[in-house]
Length: 149
Image 1: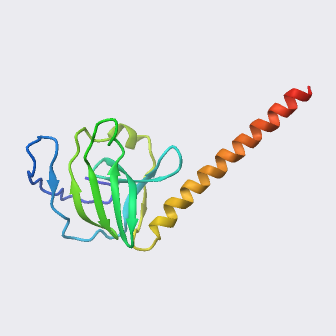
Image 2: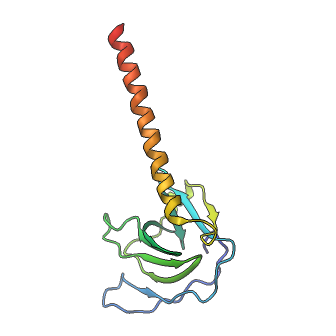
């Protein structure tokens, strides 16, 4: 059961020879209230669905394309395509769920129909850049003080 109270998990439909790659049918009901998100170490929004974590790969209008965060380390093929809050397509994963990471994270629900997803993701990246620049400036100030002493 995901954080949004979805009790009905989509039925798996075999579409591949591999036992790890599964296709899921599109959800027929719209999610009210939004989608659950956590933040990455760098402040980027990460989508949470069925105890798996996804990062935004790209957006086109009100459609967003999400990629499993373990796509490199596990060669995971898990992806989600959302239109607003509705999941249009979802593919299976090659690894177990992310229970451990989700237990340490704070989930927040956002309504994807009411925000500009592209600017939201860019704003998170810009905020991280500003924080990094401020840390570098503080380190330079400390270095100057050490050089003077």
